[in-house]
Image (cartoon, rainbow over all chains, first blue to last red; front, top):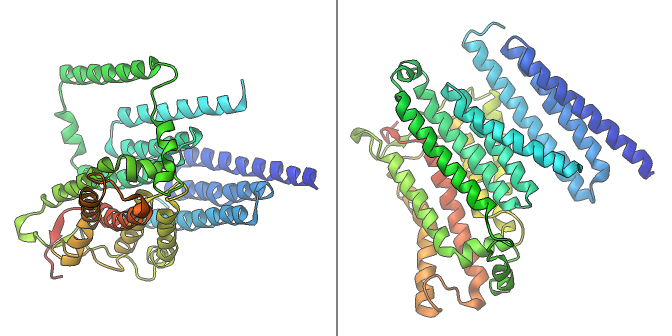
Length: 97
Length: 315
């Protein structure tokens, strides 16, 4: 059982790290604001989500696990809001779409 | 090389890079972005050093609040940035400043490197007397009991900083509302977040204050979160900044230092000296001070970010 859980942890955190890497490369390489935001949200939403998923089996108690999930939900909320605001401002200021 | 050491080296290199970037960036906005990143990375370093209290404060103040203040200062400067850069300080002055900074850095590094081993510390003394206050968090013990004078004066400094910001107000707006009136789409995402997040943030802020007695946390960290929630509601246009002449506002602003002073003078009369808590009541007294301080810190920090009064009290 614990072996299987470790496999889940390693797989999920590796996948999460991949999304962070891809998101960072996208942030650095993509040409304009909206595509860069698109890359960035992958790191926040999927990357962090997978890292949290991978850490859940290691959480000592139900409380710790819930705290981890709360962190993810709060980051989702913040990043979704900030992306919308950045995209709105970029469009208003006449950045190329 | 162990994994932990590798991680520490990576932290050190990244923090130093962020610091160099902040200094070397030629424009204000990238420099501020670098500074915010530097603050957050520094918080990770403090965690690694086993100082969660300092890490929380660094993330809240160094990364969050100072970043917001600097962004607020940078925004009006951006338009005039290029002409100002042309008439910047001369080469000699810049080299002198660099030499002075380098000397200070080298002196600091040397004094850390040549500390006697073991380094002089009051930690055992603080740990020994921890039971005197009834609080479980040694950092709160030091801040609120052993070095209470410093903490009280720190709050007075915050208040003076706010008075400094307010003194920038034009005469005709004195007593008016700080900062511009923010307008956001009442059905937009910002207004949505400003309705959704504050209940959660207020609970977390108060929890931080309450947990500070026995766990990492405390008045400053809790107060910063409360300030952020208030700023969020103001920036979403759901409420306006209060006129600085309001009586309740002034009372909240001085509540923290005032309660601290009253308890301190009470210690002079009843206890062993200024700020000496009677042992039997140490914990409730400290909690009362921290509660008042949290409110004061929250309002002070939010108003520092909001800026000087620039509109009359009537809308």
